[in-house]
Image (cartoon, rainbow, N blue to C red; front, side, top):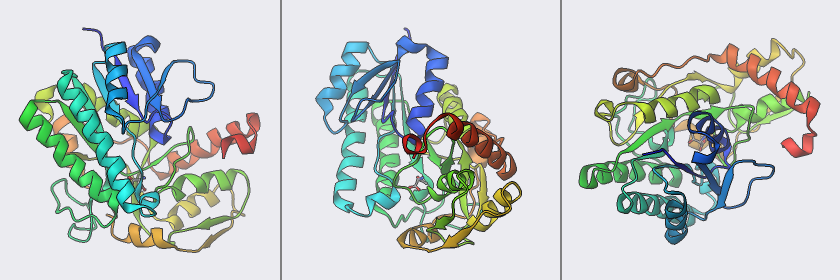
Length: 321
Ligand code: AKB
């Protein structure tokens, strides 16, 4: 059977880049990108889907004979705190819809992203293990911790092959994040390249796990390609890239932009960050499906600066930000 992939949340930070990689892998006619709104200048197949509407997901799955679903739509940690009950409803309803459609249509594989936001005060801050206690303090974290367990439930009860990764903060030049606590680590590079002052909403020593987009995408594809019997964790896998604080990324950027100015104005997102791990133990993912990150802070910084410089040379600031 030919693989036909549906990406829900394809306009997001990760979704927009992952869609391109899936097209490279499966071909343009076998990847259906979808989101709440059409994507400008997108040349592949695109369907508008509100994932809270199960009938609409079913319609697209039937129309294209979808065999795999990547469900990336969610309201993230910082944005989610503005409307906690709505965040819960959207994050959970969209997941239930995907799981139900997948089970009823015998979808071959489902990808469900989780996050380091599942961890809270009960987990060790350093090298947080895969099976650490989960007591998340944001509604986004609560929805991801529950979602992981639902993923495992659908696997155990119905044999649905749902696979999941707990992403650290994702850093990429291709797209902008929205509504997360780790977003500063993308914004800071844009400000450096634009030679503008950066106002950081976290404290200078707020150490958080991060990952470069290329590593995050590769991890996703490698997990989805792994033989079914190698996937021993059916909640979600920790993956690590690197860990750094705002002060450390500023120091790295200043090797290229010595005049780069930063002020620190911590807000409610500092509270969220203070309960998340400093670093992640990803040895389970390494052992089960061979995960290994490639990018460190130096290579991330060099690549981000070089790619953003190219982007701002050819595109106007208002169409990027
Ligand atoms: C966020 O900050 O909410 C996300 C995440 C770590 O899941 N980037």
